[in-house]
Length: 355
Image (cartoon, rainbow, N blue to C red; front, side):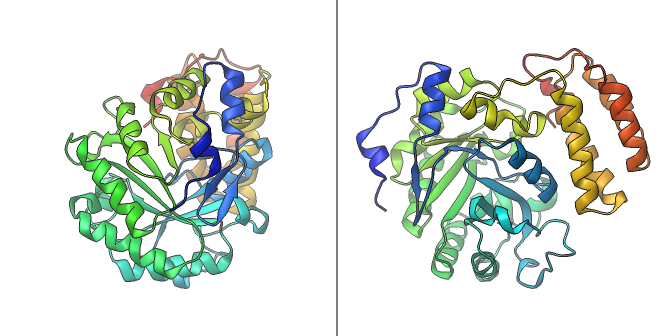
């Protein structure tokens, strides 16, 4: 793989919020395509659905969006008009990467071909999800227990598509700093165009701090772009990660759910007004209602709510009252009652609600 000129000639000198913005707005080559913004939405399960992506798009300021986790077995015959997960708006395809999970190279390759044919920016292979239900199927982070199989999946997908291939992965199942470096090199050799690295071991999920120094080791081991992921909650965290690891981009997950305007805040200088919380909650509910039937829309809002309510000083009480509802009409009433006037907010969210 040939590195972008932006990586071979420019080392990141990032010490202020302005420096961070300038760095994030440098173009970055990923495979045969280029993005103009290095701050991207992280691949997540149950949160990166069509309605949430539309909400983030309305604020703007990002480089790429990622879908929720789509089953590779289902994707080849999935109908986006009825699917709750494998669905999109045509106008978002050129900046959206479709995330898939599976355990077999040929099944992942078949799904990737469908994704490429639909016109997505790229396909993302999930080797990071450590949820028991996924790992029991041999998918997600479980594939890091069989490195050869994980690498064979990357190779099969690379052979099947012309669009960029992303891989998201963790440190592994043991706290071995050499393992992610070895895997990163193997993924690159197999044809991956970019890596999203979450430096935690799978059994911990999020119970311990991410070891950002491992992002630097992975970045130094490969020539393809590496997006750092894990506990990026404020601009100073982004500055620190880039300075310490030299990663080529930032992948924002839970914090983007808590504050969907974070991309516009870090790259466009958005200064949120206090009313943004109520307006965002109402818009999230409206978009969910546009895309899903009432029952599923409410279910998705309840997945979104803990992260969003983590912004508030009395987050647990507000969350409990907000989701005490059986339909979307009641939810709208709750939003008005609880968020107007705006509750007292926290500088950094209540991490205990970042489940």
